[in-house]
Length: 227
Length: 246
Image (cartoon, rainbow over all chains, first blue to last red; front, side, top):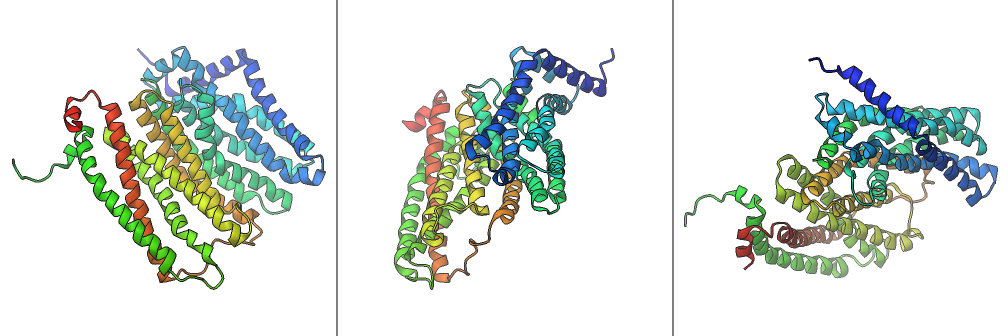
């Protein structure tokens, strides 16, 4: 009997999650609209002065991205946990590291990539220059996978708990802080006319670290939560 | 009664540790009281009354610095205990981690409060988004996350292990968070204020060290009391515990 290879398993897992997300498009769109609404609230709360908006834009976009991606975390494992698929996945012979990586990658494509695509449009509302918008997109592209990876640890730890959503926020938001600092740092550097490259490199380093360690921690957390 | 070497593994069993902890508590309580008395007396009456620019309010550092140190130290200790408890399936170590968390959170909180009370006369403001203060604040968030995760899981063993994963992930992140916050504050700060003061005089250092030990002993007392409560709660079915408590 030949079991599916690791690569085909990986691809199949991502395909399945994307398909499931497509069948429940409204969930995905809700996260996206949450992001848009939060970002749009800031000018209303702070005032329409262009200079001020330009200063706060990096922070606003990034904080809104953190909050929106946190909302989406529950979906990473939640549905599979409820219908028992997760237990089956834990029993497969393929390394759990890859299974987790596939799920996180799918979650990133579904929940984070739309934010990255919409963010430059929102940046326009804040009067950011083209160069700044470009750097903002790059910083989000590098940073949001880290959010998905670290977030997956929190999502796995809180599986099936009461008030899991609020709890995830408490666990995960402090761990998001370095990403927030590097991400906004890169954008601010272009606003003030300095070199954003160090921040992007730091974001990249964080991504590599998270790729190496987070799926491992998530696997451990999944085994603890499902037993 | 054989007077052979003490078998340390024996005390890894919560039921055996319970009476031992009970015997240790009075000693450490005594040490705590003595050290606090000496340290506070030295800090308030013997240490020089006035630094050349700081006034009496500087004495708050005798509480502030030990509290900040304990806050950081206890997080590391908690992560180690949680990790040991998870890796070797040692229940007592996990219980110790659970028992340490509230004390660490309280010390972190005290260091934040005393820091801002010191900042008001010294800097003119209660709070500055300075690297150290910000990372201490984040440390408190990490404690709160650990405590709230453990308290929302009903099953004790799952709570132990989930807490261990979180504490270890947090411990790996602490240096990253610390350095990122430092870069962030150097990016933002107008360099009007620095926490780097002049070198500390010996007459001020000694009470600070004594009070640090006092806080340390206090932590041991509180953690032992708390771990005894946890043992009672979790091991109430163990027959030998009934003997120990009788």
